[in-house]
Length: 143
Image 1 (cartoon, rainbow, N blue to C red):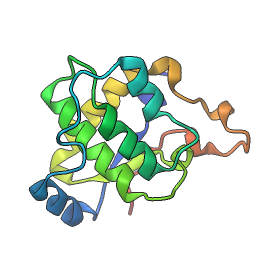
Image 2: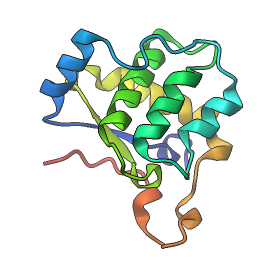
Image 3: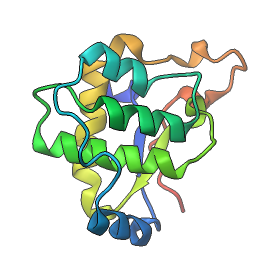
């Protein structure tokens, strides 16, 4: 299994209109720190005990580790907004978030970064006690 196949995927969908509004107004992670501890970042990204919304808040507080590229940082900001939009959904059930179509490359840059940086923390499908495939990333965009 490659690093990128263990990460969550980004879905480009009809939520582009909503996301355009978020982009224009700034998002909750825009001012997040840029010198986060890598382990704290990875732990927050894969926190299995929180809702998506709480993980988004946690990631916005922690920020990104030093050295992420501008594209990866923008992807992080989009991911945090997408998680926040998922509300009370358990983080373990989130395997994709919606981003504007024009931001797909930066979103993928971020998930590639997470896949490479946080590989040891990435849950595997066998980590899910229900046997549900929810931990397996999906590359199928919404119809």
